[in-house]
Length: 355
Image 1 (cartoon, helix red, strand yellow):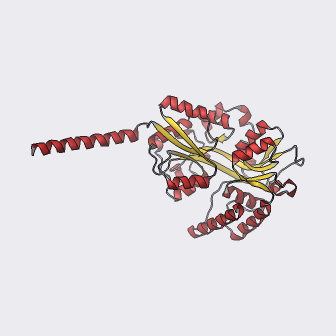
Image 2: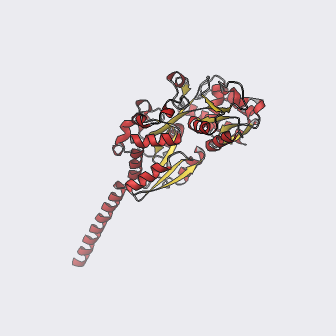
């Protein structure tokens, strides 16, 4: 009996120690942090600074399109601690229950986020995501080969540019561009409007060099291999810095206004460390450092005082309000059945374009 009692006490103490250790590990910083991000979408120096300050090894893997990112999270929702995703992808990840609620008490720098990016339609109250960077999607073109002033989407359907045009490898962006060019909302769920968009995109397909990764589009524009392209504002600005013949325009018919955000995958092993990293990135100086490196606009009003003047004054990156007022965010509305039907139609369109 005494021996059994001692064993029970030992087991109880061991179990208590194990539980305390597990709790400490969960609440304390981990040795590593695993991030899943777009290619070339953070300043490497920021990762190194975080490693040095917090003694955490940061491992980063990149993806080229969000379909691949979502598939990876479905296959192994515990592989990564942080994922960077677009507003529409955050919506999908929430619905698929692939991301978890964020403990914002660990992110006091959330106060630095501009009010207009808080409580977004794709994630009310920012329960599952924290805004990172924002921008527009428009048209970049090479003035050496295109002499006319480009003001709209039509240039991406110009037969004279066959083989010198590219579209992004993003379903919502591509279908949205076609819808806007037809005078419809990029969030349209009207089957007839989507049919017209499909027909327009199928006619465009034979003109394209492809549906390409944004970094590939950026580099091909710089080299003059593409003369006109569907592109994100930050990549366009980077390309313009390397090739002075390039220009970026937010089409007069309208364009995408998007936000990319941090989220934490459902089975993340290092959630507290992930929240610590997000808070670190939201520090005003750190956020500005990323903007000055990437040439993307951020959602952090406190960072503005540290951002390069040439970036803040560039209307391709920080458009005036009258231009932004003509842009739309990807926020589909309708009943569950209407949204399911809309998603089926969009998936079918995208499948036809890629095959």
